[in-house]
Image 1: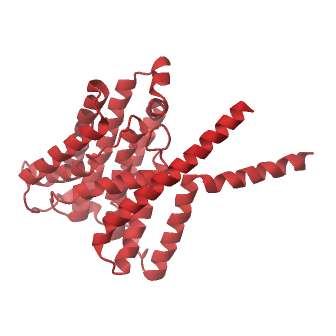
Image 2: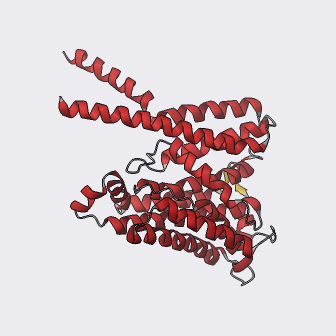
Image 3: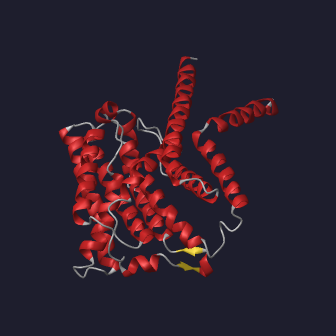
Length: 336
């Protein structure tokens, strides 16, 4: 009797796994990693790891920065994440350095606070003025992009000393220091989870009315979600500074579409309420491996935006299909 019951359970688990968007992106990431190793056998060689990590970390943190606003629901696509990376980079190089604020313990927290402040402004307008997030963040996108060009019309300057240190590695190249910024972002997310804030954001994103009825301060939670995303974008801007080792107003905006694509590819619902950072990190890794493979095959970099857009459309279609299937299954269970 026990064996007869156990077999259907195993079959049910086996049927569920391929339908998970996270399982899909794991398989795709593994295949792309193998393809990169075949095309470039030294892809993970110790002498290349620091440079590889420097390329990956800004994208990963930008994807993480997009998660809280999307998770909070209400159509919370934060389009200002990319330009915020750029403004943090410019502030670190063109404002803090000339002012003598080059110490890591001073400039790094200030840049993270700058990101959190911009995110808080977005959150305040979305949560309390109740304007559409896409309109608010598009306006912030234009303001930050224009301000970056005003502050630095041409790429100039050198990065602070801490950026040069983070571009190095430990243990013979097997531990790139730039990954410390990614670790800091993950720790910030873990802290938010431990404090119960991520659970509140998911509740608001799933059903804001039900959350409000349960006593959740919906506006304050959404405000905090945008501020958290801004802080993560501040870390991404620091990672961008490590990558380009200078100030450049034109690089940051390129991360906007890639960040949203990584979140969608990682299985997070763009409607809010479902997801975390594990999926978007895998989504960012998938996009990074695609870029590396195209570069190794000498494909023009002009195709990158085409790839990002295609991945975003495919991810949204897959997630919608899976979400609809899960909804029908839940309704069938409740009805039965």
